[in-house]
Each structure stands twice: as C-alpha cells, then as structure tokens.
Length: 393
Image 1 (cartoon, one colour):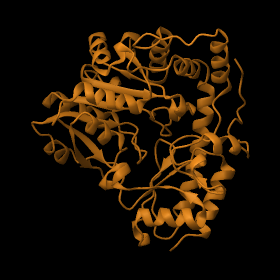
Image 2 (tube, helix red, strand yellow; image 1 turned 45 degrees about the horizontal axis):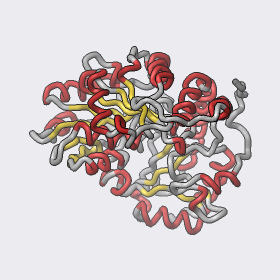
Image 3 (cartoon, one colour; image 1 turned 180 degrees about the vertical axis):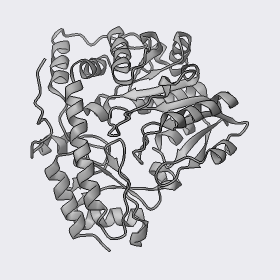
C-alpha cells in the first residue's frame, strides 16, 4: 500500500474540476461557479491512496457478486478491530452488520425497534436524521433543549420521558455543537435508559474527529450499555467516503443481528451494503490510520483559525467545538435570521453556509449558521475574507 506524507492536507490546491462534477448535496456541483461551499459535512480532499488501490485490486478479479446479508466477514472483523484500536472496546464481529450508510442505518434501526406512536427522546438542536428516522418508523420525537454549550438539565430531561418513550437518541460527538459528552453524562443517560427500559440509539459517526484531550467516549464503553445500545458508525466523515455510502450498526448480540436482518429486509437482498464499498471501508480501517491522524491535525488547525476570525464579526459568538469539522456560530445578535444571513452570504460573498433552521437541526438551532472546515487553508481563508468583506452588520 502507498505511504502518505505528513503534509497530506497542506496543498494549496484541490481538484475543483472534479469536485464541480461530483460533489453534490449543496456543494460544488450544485452551486454557481465561483461560490465556495462551506455546507455539507463532506471533505474536499480526495480519499486516501490505499483505499483507491484496494478498490482497483478488488475489481481486477472481475466479479461484483452478492455478499452475505450482514456484510463481508472481513468487513465485520475490520470494524471490530477498529473498535478495539480506537475506542478500547472488545466487540465481537458477529454483533456487527454492514449498512449502506449510517443515515440509512438510523432509519433501519428506528423501523426495527420502534412501533407506530412510540416516542424517541432527542436533543435540540441535533442532526435532522434523528427526527427523520423516527418519522419513517411512524414514531414521534420529543426534543430536549441543550444549552448553548451542549449542557444537559437532567431533571428536565427525565421529565420528558413518558409511557410512550421507547428510545433515547444520542449524538456523540454532537452535530452541530461539536460537543463530546463526558463519561458521567453518558452514564446518566444509560441509567435513565435502564430505569425506564429504553433503547439507546447512539450515532457515533463523528467519533474519529475529536480534538479534546480526553478523546471520544463510546456509549459501548460503559458497563451494562451493550444490552440496550444500538450503535451507528460510518466512514463518510473520517475518510471522505460519503458517496460509497457505507457504515455499520453494532447490536446487543447475534440474535438481535438475525432479527434486524429480517426486519430490515437485508436477509432478502432488498437492503444491504455494497461489497465494493465494504472493501473501501476495510482499506480505510486497516491502512489509513496515519492519514486520519493527519486529517484531524489539519482540522484542529482549521478550527482554531476559523474560530478566531469568526468571533471578531459583529453580532457573532462562537463556541470552540471539541469535535467534528463544523462550526455553529450564534448570529442572533446580527438582527438577521439564519436564513436571511445565509442568503446574503450566498448572494454577496459567494459563500454557501447552512442556516440553523428547524428543518435541519430543530428549533434550538434558530439564530445559528453552520460552516464546514474540511477544506484547504487557502479555500477557508478565501471564504472568510469574503464573509468579512460582505458582513451585513
């Protein structure tokens, strides 16, 4: 496999021509030429070379046959090893199911473990996929408002648990606040789940992009959590494999795997992960840890650079995220709504950001915008220069 240099993320140029052809979801391919997208949480950088080499090698054999419903044995074992190395968790491969993206996995889990009119308790703000998944299952969501810095009022939290509550959604690390919940906080969530006999849906898609000294703490690292935790992981944030649409779920035991495959349809080939995408993920976990470390170091630098500049804009305050590669500045003192400010920046600064609307993150996101940092320093600098020159306040 190819080696990569420590300067993997320092080049001043990326292949914008290819990005304009392939990077959709509010990014380069969907915006007018000349507009910089700091939108969807999808890196501008090309995927690591070992992943590309593994895909080419796999295709040389000339077959793309069906794989096992739960995923290739090599994939499930590689995912288990990833847990051992990065989270210190011993997780047997027979508890892991390959899924076509963590987003798809969230919907599949909601359908498998929630009934119509059940309720899932979710944070506010939080990624829209939690409410989307519950809706697809015919269930409802109850939102618990986090503080501006992501703190939890436990008495209020518990008061929202009703006889209909069946699940607690946990985004760890948190999107869009960039908060990494502490072990005592996760343990308190677990205690409430045990007290009321609830499932925990743990979205840990951002777990590799953590800047705090304590690192990421997985829900599965807590004693007693495994029997009621449905965990989601993926490779889109860590290795730029959003288009491969590959992730996995970790379930309490092998019996739950069998039941999940039956309920999701994967047992009948109506659902399931691409074998080619699984090959990409295996290569990422086996051969790209050094690349990932370099990526996180680059993102930490991007975070510090952007927070320093954005905090100086009139009417703006920004909390320094402990994780993720997005910022979520509070712009409520600008006198403009998030939608108005986002449209202004798109029209005059030629920079696209995501408004903190209820559609994307819940009512608690009002008065914020979200910016992605997963690009080169030159592009980020250009975007911030444009924002500063065209700031409406």
